[in-house]
Amino acid sequence: MMDHSGAETTKVFTFEENENTLSVSIPEVLDPQYGMYVWPCAVVLAQYLWSRREELRDKTVLELGAGVSLPGVVAASCSATVILSDDANRPPCLQNCRRSCEANGLSDVRVVGLTWGEVSPDLVLLPKVDIILGSDVFYEPDDFEDVLVTVAFLLRKNPTAQFWTTYQERSADWSIHSLLHRWKLNCVDVRLESFNADKPGLAGSTLPGRHSIQMMIITLKTDSA
Image 1 (cartoon, helix red, strand yellow):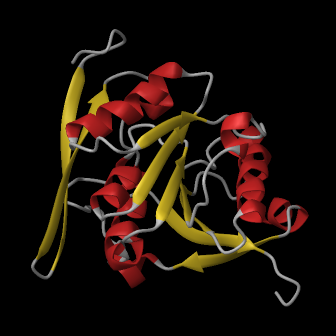
Image 2 (cartoon, one colour):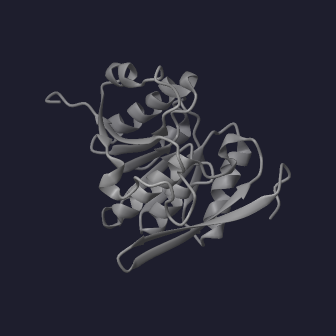
């Protein structure tokens, strides 16, 4: 299928460990809009999901700002129940999510419009989730707090859930730590070498390349934390 805004191509990502292999196909649209192709952070997060695939079985996973949805597609392919979400005000981004599901034969993945920072009916009515995913959602500093408002709402509704997120270091001046404190959230850094993601090419691709990618797990702060 051809998107009206540009030519479509498909990238195949193949995750391997010992004798286990998973290949997923991700349609991309050659268009300047952010969500139309796989970003370096997405491959790193997808690699983390692959490394934790046994834990994903029968879990409910929500991806925020999913775009072309590589992490969510990997989670669904590892037997998780997956909900993909992107900006409710950008229908082409939601269509990206659906296109990636269709390319991988995932007919039971739900796609919802969620706008960061807005407590919408669709957000309130989400089922219980175990894992929240976010790939490069900390891209625009103006969006940082809106992202964490949404994450904090979800974690308060699901106190045992975790937010798994990867981000690309773009400026030493950009930080979410004061916002984490404000919204009573904990953050633990995950070293890339701990899940074999400390290399320039993952899953048979050229990503993440030379980009500096970090991963962290964010949880609700408890009284004892």
